[in-house]
Image (cartoon, rainbow over all chains, first blue to last red):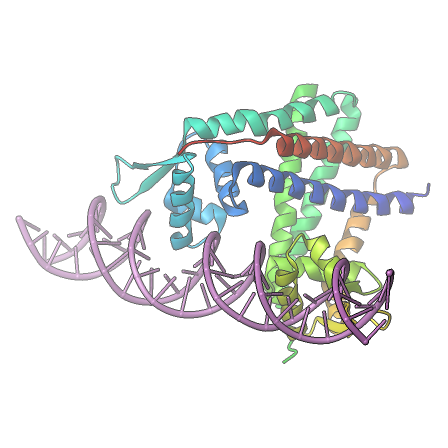
Length: 159
Length: 159
DNA sequence: ATCTCATTCTTCGACATTCGAAATCTCCTG
DNA sequence: CAGGAGATTTCGAATGTCGAAGAATGAGAT
């Protein structure tokens, strides 16, 4: 197999991996009866140990404050998040994952990390270094391209 | 750096790469003034040389036929897709990318592939093989975990 | 002290996206 | 050529999002 062929296969592999991630997220959302936005919010709440403010959540989700309020409402109704008044600033509302959310983390997300680690165990240190480098390079390429697209001010101007 | 540490970094790298893909898609959608669903549909139309039927598009997008109709409507209004009656079966509607959509492909998507290929050029064949294997393994892990989650019939049963 | 003015979140009304069900048109079979 | 199956669209309802206005709190100035 020529190098060019492998490069094409890598590109394809990356795309397929993307789809698999999407499929997993979809499965998790369905299992938890949450929409994708709420699932993203839950991820953020779980990955931050300390509670996030509503505004921080809004920024992280790139959602308007209004939409974020309803996201928190839904997670609260689902028993996965709770609102707490910030003791230092009573304008702020802190949002924290509940114990039920921690259980979701244990049941759904932790096994993924475990399985991933097992799958990587067979690689040598050198191979892992190559993989890590590849991930870094791929990310850089994507980020550069995203920047280019954002700058391009593309306009179809069809009408 | 210990193997375990590298494995953790790989896990992190994968997550970051995911976010970069998401950011690129977001940038592309913004540039084209399309929502994410319509962008996915456009991708499908561009990657299939021959036109897709509305039903095929519906299945590929995992969207109801009704929603797919409106997706096609929007792409058509944007000048990026066109409806054609299937000459062999006039019930079917074939959807094809327009010349404007091909221009989008050239301007937005092709440079990503070029930059990606350039970034991979520095790796040896063996390294590329490792990367390819990793992508395959990662996908398998994700798919297995998605299957597990789908089977788990998770229920928070909060109320 | 109290009076702005900014900050933070929520409420409200409007708009966009999606779905399920019914309708329309076309194909195929008997 | 009549009836049923298939493919798409139309319609009405539900959901998610936004911008703007509103309410509560904090901070600085007089």
